[in-house]
Length: 58
Image (cartoon, rainbow, N blue to C red; front, side):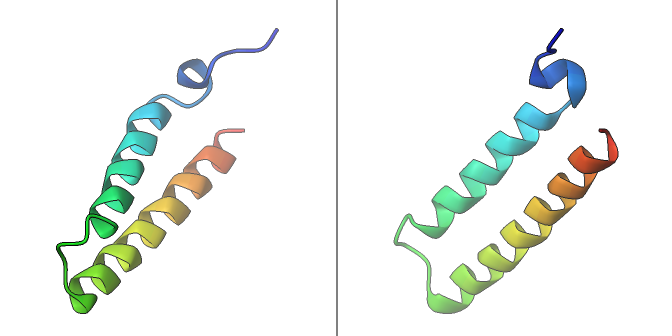
């Protein structure tokens, strides 16, 4: 029987929402190039960390 995301990976939904909001800030249009680069670097690090955590829980 299939379980929902929250049962399989506690906190995954909240982590996904945080990632979405971080990426939204990049495209808001009110940041300079250095700030965008820093936000994208952080976004990529968090996304990789989130992916590894999800794979470890399988």
